[in-house]
Length: 216
Image (cartoon, rainbow, N blue to C red; front, side):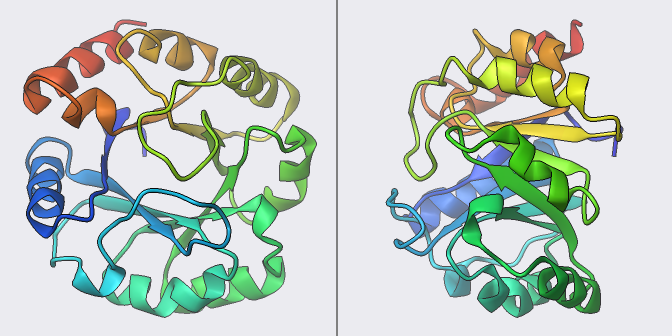
């Protein structure tokens, strides 16, 4: 896991051509990608390409952030897409034993996402299933939000207070300006959407983020 780039591009867009373009970028530069699925019930958010319309891809690592009320409903299709890991919200109310059993059957790795307003101790009961934790830097759903000031203290708290080895990824509000501080606080991976694809040359943006995060 440590050999992967600390920057994971988020492939998210409702335009099939743009979605495919960002996926090609991930395949070329990082061999890893982060995908989002929203159901419109768990949270409101930007439109994204429907799962059934995703093009085929080949990646060394792929993860899907399930911003949904019923994550179990998506597992079979994600396994068919050869997704590596699913990220399930601790706030979803999913049955942990059922989730773990079904993920094991389908050869899907687990990870858990936690919202900014959720008590960080709520993550504890999920650690027996996975030590891969996604800290939301924004309220989930909308791209381009400014990172909340609570994000870095949350990362530091998790690294300091939980004895088990954690892999922490940050999703939402990642920029060239805050990337270094996020890594210093203890984040292992940063999900980047606007920071890569928002303006300018995506390759140059990615390389700049990579230089910053590796300079620690």
